[in-house]
Length: 204
Image (cartoon, rainbow, N blue to C red; front, side):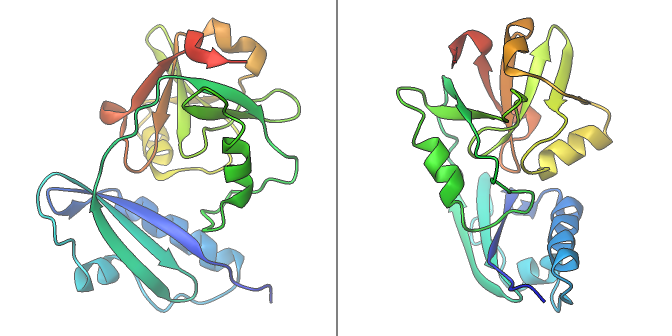
């Protein structure tokens, strides 16, 4: 049996209530299934035992776990200011299909951002994937598309697909000019609270 590394799960709380718990539960289940380990705890129970001390506004719950929950921290959420992105090639070896706590390779990519605020990762064939910390959507007039093969299938992305609000599409770096803007989404940034960057602010 392969060794069980540490993972992170980030849950958005709104006015004391956790959001998209079913999707977070499924992601944790995927981790344990891949490592063929039986999970002895459940996320809803853990959050009931260790509830957020902040009952109003948007709160970030960061949980660190392996076979057991190792740490839970609650902080008021402050959205980053992202006005520009730098296109950065991702290493062929980069695997982040599970939300690993070890983000060293992603951090190495992030450090190539130069004067931009964050990065836009793309594969060897030019297919774009994600930023350093979020899934992305691309706006084309009134349609929203998300890269078909992201590094991590985030909970917000999964929910939007289930709701039929976005469509998957293979999108290449060379096609960015066909779109109006890039939207950054993740568990903490639902579509009505996302960051939107014009494609003209992407440094190639």
